[in-house]
Image (cartoon, rainbow, N blue to C red; front, side):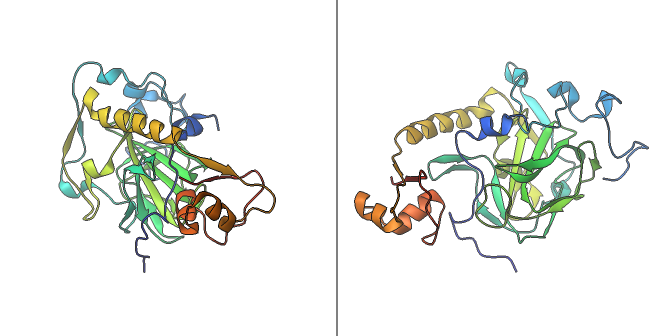
Amino acid sequence: MHAQSTGTDIGGPEGLDLFDELSEGEGAEAAGMPTAWDVNDSLSYIPGYDMYCHWNTDVIFDHSGTKGHFDHDTLRLQLGEHACDLNMPCPGGVTSGYGMRRGRMHYGVDLDLETGDTVRAAFPGMVRISKYNKTFGNVVVVRHYNGLETVYAHLSKRSVEPGDLVEGGGLLGLGGNTGRSYGSHLHFEVRFLDQPIDPALLFDLEHGSLRTLEYDLHKGSFARMAAAKVAAQRTQASRKFHTVRRGDTLSAISRRYGVRVSELCRINGISDRSTLSIGQRIRYN
């Protein structure tokens, strides 16, 4: 039985540094093709290669040379033939949505699951990333034939490798709580040319179906994201922190700044039983 949503206590990677942090260096057969491909085999078999002009199996997000498609025309993406063509990655409901969260950007949605639950591909495609990352934990990225990429993070186990072909609903791994995570859940993202898209614009996450069979992308598609990042930068600049010294406790910090212990725990993603380390920064506003 899945746990009920607890608001902000279940969450995953977020923050203004997420793009930079994740950009640092770090299936079944179909149409007679092998299940894994080397980039030297045939670029024509790699989904969306003509759009991305690269096939990077190390860097989760690569922003180089991926914005030209939005200089002029609208790009129409075919999401499916029928509303039921989406395969939900896991059966749990949304515990945290896309957008601003505690003053930071959350670039995907968090879906409820238990550690060990099956995680499946939303659409057919090819695995580009399957690795461990300090923020996303065990993470898989699948590139689809329309150029979209979907991200599946915090897995306890990965069952695919880069180059594997997967069907819609194909096994990617098992859900978990790895990386920067505060409880078992799946962090699920949708991106195009490394730009995040709110999954709720494309999918009816509650019913597990497509909202639209065709989705139009253009320069204005990401205007909200740019505005939100500016707002988040301003919020980040106004934050205040206490650096933990010997003998400090949450109660003492609470009294010093007039902030309740429960609020300190909430905004720092810790519990009232957490052990503080000397030099640790505790945000208090």
